[in-house]
Image (cartoon, rainbow, N blue to C red):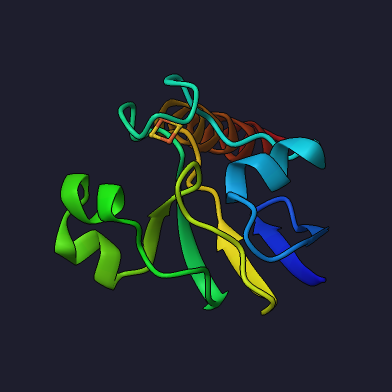
Length: 115
Ligand code: FES
């Protein structure tokens, strides 16, 4: 069994080699956004390998993802398979959520300055 650590939440799960990342995540209540049911068409399930490694990119990943993304460690969680090696994966944050959080932090900082 290997371990996968998911960022930014920091949750670590144990996985068997050969599972898709999205299946292993779902079985351990780690949410990876997706809309196509794992058919490699929505591209919403991208994860970034920050440490360790996953199985080699599948033919589908090679066909629909840019070479630049694959070289940077971006993988489709519905296609990428776990190995017997530990790894750390980053689930990119939703852009809207990031913008709202930044605005709230700015607002809090401004309110703190008023006091
Ligand atoms: S779940 Fe849609 S591309 Fe992976």
